[in-house]
Length: 219
Picture 1 (tube, rainbow, N blue to C red):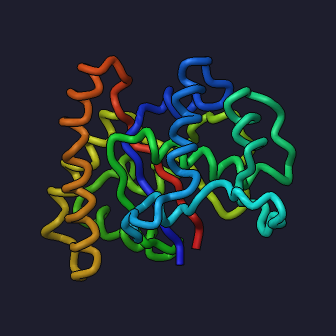
Picture 2: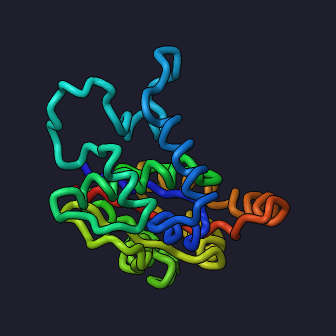
């Protein structure tokens, strides 16, 4: 099953993770440390817990997957160093964990390639321009300095388009025929409405205005 994970965070913050400045690198290392080993009492089922712990403390345990990040991957990402082809998947996973730990908000949609296109088609029937469709979001590259990896598509819409999505999708709701699509779009609109609040808080804290970043595990 495919899954589209959406985050509210400035695109420059995402791009700046690769080769981060010293102060930002120190903060991101703390984010990684918090994701290192969730405490047993931590609630399960959340977005970060779905991503899983990024490192294992048992040095005798073999690396079972090329997408399991290692401490060296964090060093390479934050240092802007060369990422070997066999560590690209792990580095993208690590980047998403850091994005999730820095984002103002996050949500996820279970979408296969077909159901994503069906949803965009339903929205188009309701008058939504393709320019604010989900497929267009994923076709807008982030320009992060990492080579693409098979099975993962990462894209973004700038803040004004995120607001435009909320408005356009809300207007299209009466034309959405299936209960499943209506529920999905309703939840997405409610989440996108948070961008106005997050933008105000970001301005107060001196952080960039949040953009809409999408990580789609293709299914």
